[in-house]
Image (cartoon, rainbow, N blue to C red; front, side, top):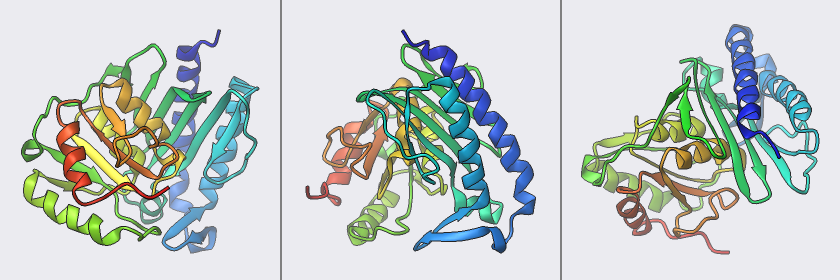
Length: 268
């Protein structure tokens, strides 16, 4: 039987190691070693190098596992275990020297997430959880807030940067939520948005246009910290469906209901 706690601890150590390297290399960044993957979607040589380091170590930890990795340095999927890796979430922030930036690593066993690690490199904060355990930040247990009303909540979100299919209703919902919450925060790193909900810095989070590696680890840490997670329809297709809503159990129903008034689930 797999020792999830031990593997999680090894992944935490790996994320910290790569994070230290990313901080030290940031001063070398310039336009020469930056390229564009799509509209407003950038990748640096450090994304790729950090992913190569992460993938190599994860192969040692769970040799039978496959990978869903953002930079596609490894693309083989396995039958039961698959790592989901974002080596540098918040690349635009990183390019500009602006926090937050995070490393996000999750392990999925069949259809169940069993390990999630998010390391925010600038604050030196590592958030993690494993199947059968709690959620932690640098060794201290964390939990979502008990906020029960949108009027009392602080929400996090992300702005669309390539998928503008529902931009107008999204902007209308942002306008509405500005008037019915303590405010919105856009940090530029989905993984960080999620872990900030997990530790109570924000009460809820929503975004669309997401990829599995954006949300896998952070959403699992949130769930283990007591949060509810769904897609915009209230279903469980948040990992591959491109939509995600997260909040503590007292706030979640109102947040989801308000969101659905403006943003309907994407058609199949």
